[in-house]
Length: 403
Ligand SMILES: [Zn+2]
Image 1: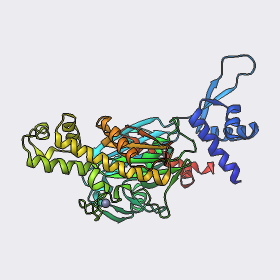
Image 2: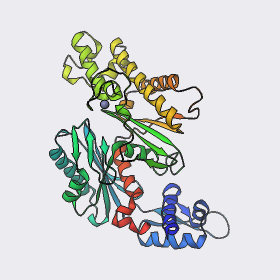
Image 3: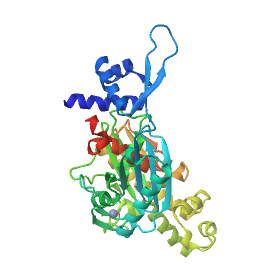
Image 4: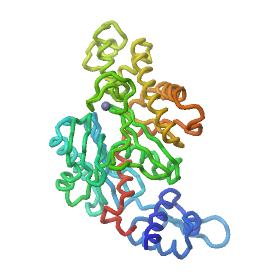
């Protein structure tokens, strides 16, 4: 039975990645017989997950029927709990966005209120999507920090100050009958990079994905499979030491990458230099309202050649390079995706990160690794979360027939 179940998922993934596609091509791609494909595709059609996309019209002889993913039956809800923004989306089975919504994260430091806000975002997008509740497969909430494997408990989220918050249990109680899973935001981000139709989708690639935002995190996909670690907490690249005795970090340690190169760290360094230099370009950019200084303002001032801001950005890139070189030496990945809000401030930053990474990585190690700009879709984490629902379909009643 195991092999049969596996084939259903493979057929579905094949149609997702290559559809519209005919049954003979699916059989060839998945490596199973045509009758087996026919039996599986009949079931997928009956479950309303795929449908006919018409017949091939060109050529002589038989005109095979093409199959495609249905966009109008199964729906997935993804939520990105960022330190600055809370984003929710509803997507169809084909990945098409039905609706989306962003609000500011106003109560990040208060788990109870933040959970209320997460529930409000979910209720809002469901209403806005105007879909049948019975067609919602499930919800995946992506959150930064250490998330316990299985339980979806937030063990520790430094930027939110949360410790041991059973987020998945609470959300399942509050949002019943929807089934909710909680996953790490960087994993959702990495999953989005391998979304159906993406260049390396469904390939046996090893990917390291670093998320540079208000905080810093990462995720690793090994030979196409998400890597979690023994307890689910792998990927905390933001909290490796890059400067012993460096600035204090939200995790309690000192000199972490996050304390030097994150959006929060860049903002803090910008505010410090602005206080000492009221005539600087940075102060000018914010009309001397120093409380308005954020990482974006520091990037803008650097682009206008504010010497101290150039230095802040250059230092941030240097420490990121040190950390990525370590990741290359350890993992030898095919691809490094550099993602997150900080990468939306022009291509110079990525070029600097690449330069420092190459300078630090061991000679001959990771020679094939490509360092690429990740998706800049504001909803990449929320959409990646929806893909994780399908990946873990055995936990969701509506997808259990695939197993
Ligand atoms: Zn730290």
